[in-house]
Amino acid sequence: MRRNTTHGFPFPMAHYERIIGVCYIAVHAILLYFAADAVLRAVGIYFSPLKINLIVFIISAVILLCCLSRYWGASLGGAIKSPFRVIQALILGYAFYFFVRWGINTLIALFSGQSVAAPELAAVFEGIRLDTDVMLVVAIVLSPIAEETMFRGALFGTLRTKSRVAAYIVSALVFSLYRAWPHLAGGNSGAAWVYFLQFLPASMALCWSYEWSGTMITPAILHALMNLISTVSIRVR
Image (cartoon, rainbow, N blue to C red):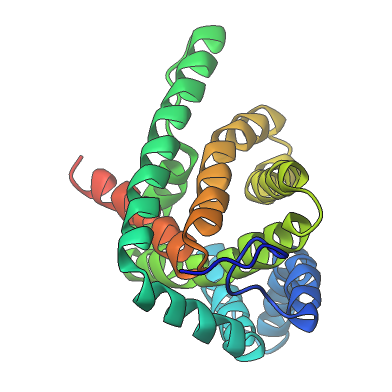
């Protein structure tokens, strides 16, 4: 796979695609959920937060795939041309995520005196308890498409053209804050900061897998794999 030394990726987003992807983070993370909830309530429909999230992720995935179809098509072509590099990035990326997350959980447990579960396990457990099918669709299909497009493709990819270090730091912090924000907004600041720390390894691994393979398909698959393994581990308990 020939690499684009200017952008750091052989299949970079176009300028207008980056603008769409970065700006859409605020729409997806803040505005869309409340808008969907308000519209549903206005017509007398009351959904659980999980089902509202399903609607939000469906809308986001469709919008991003349609607006960035050129980028996703190029990424898919790159993955098909270099499957072994994709596989290598998946294996190494997941290994990094697993061991660094284990180290962070160990340190948190050491200082807090309590065992700490991985953050996605708690979310997956609650989702499975409420609606298994909905949780699986969100966690394994919709979430990887929407979140990888925004946080890795647009945010990390844009910053990567300026500074590799800044790209890793900023995208990891923003993604972790996005994941921890519901707990912080709910007043559970202790859990929010634990979740924030626990999501940093996932964000770093996803950024690296994108950078190493050069295609957005890799972090999307890795993201889905992380969620799938979490789901399976919950189901067999």
